[in-house]
Length: 115
Length: 414
Image 1 (cartoon, each protein chain N blue to C red):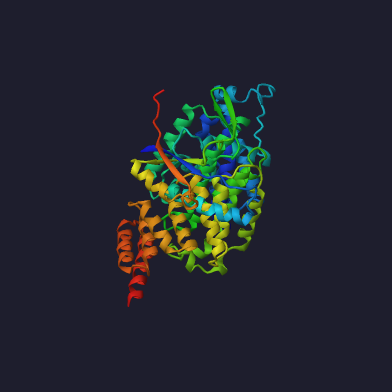
Image 2 (spheres, each protein chain N blue to C red):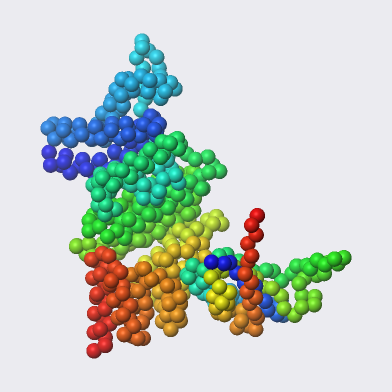
């Protein structure tokens, strides 16, 4: 089994509206069901995390505000799954709720270092 | 005389473990067998004496007095041993010394707790921890333990002997773990109690009384932890809540012959409301701190199951609880139960593809689940899966349950 990093990207939400508890529940069910489904197959390595929308980008000689100065999309979060092949990991990613809102999932095998 | 005979087995269970714990604390774990022997001898004498002379006014006090005398005799006759053990207690007086064997409630409880930590030690395998717990902490006989494990006396004796040897090699002591270590050691203890409870709850042994006793012992030991300041963490209370909820269905879930009655077929009038309320109490007490342990989640799920009605709210909640449980720790049981909850919450169409992905091909429960999911969707597949389940099932009770499901599906086809 290899570990694969799944990176979720989407265009950032506009406005400052904070979702209501009902909306949060509605948003979280598809995500929890998707991750739960992967965990039920014993293919979840790390639940991962969401990333906050603020932040900084450090380049040589400059530090810019936040991740969205030039790119339309930002990374929303990540998860780590385990699978035997890239194809298998991709299958797991196909059901990710980010796709339903126009986002995408980058699937990258983790290359372990022999330290 | 009759009353004496009935009383002794009950007293044996409760008092044997207390006496053994206190004496082991006094002598040191390396001499645990001496403590056990003294306790056994005490009960042997009780059986002989009470049989002839009748019950004493206070049986427990009688037992403690005899145990103390035997322990003192042992210490006096084994000087090297006693020089090591009793220097702190010695009260040199004309060459004789008084040894105080403390059988106060506090020392009994503390000794039992410390015995729990000594026995539920990561150095020995889980089944050895349970076996030793049953023997030393719960006063079960070797035959009862072999019945519970569906094993034989020789195997159990070997297992317990090896476990004690290993613990001696590790120089295990009867003491509370250091504050920094307690959380870690508690994990092992809780796992053992959980497994002990499960032995009683899911055991295939036909002896229903024994199975109930195993569950009650697990609860009693858990309660000791809850009642002690050093060990009453939220997850300890959550585990007790979980046990209470499961135990509330004791009377409703087994027939006389030991066969299990499925949850949906149970008579809720036989559910023990007092235990349910106890469970709720402990679950509320467990709702503090920042840690949501797997015991919290399982207890919350069990709480939902104290309501029989099939509502969307119930199953959506149970589904999310299983999702969170799987995120903490994968187990085939959780995976299967989660998929069942998914079917109840979001429908079989969504659950079937998820179930197919689980691929738990050695488990009769997996094929039973597939059978349930395909019933009324594709009866032919349902029966095929159930027949696979029948082949994989080992116990007569499980086979009977699966056969009933097969019959039900076939009847529905007519």
